[in-house]
Length: 67
Image (cartoon, rainbow, N blue to C red; front, side):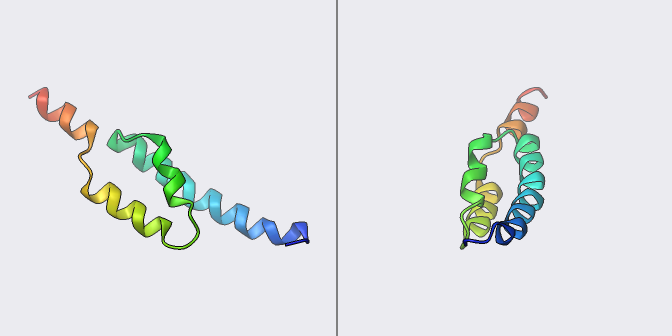
């Protein structure tokens, strides 16, 4: 990738993909460090989906303990 213009779609895709994940991680109470896994080009998003789906969400545990 010698041409700087070749990086533009990759940067746009990363920003579009990362923004919803940051919001999702914030709402679930998980660490923002998990976003690094999602940015792995092949399969990172799928791995991230499974990790978030089956993880114990700290935000949910806190809400249930308040009841």
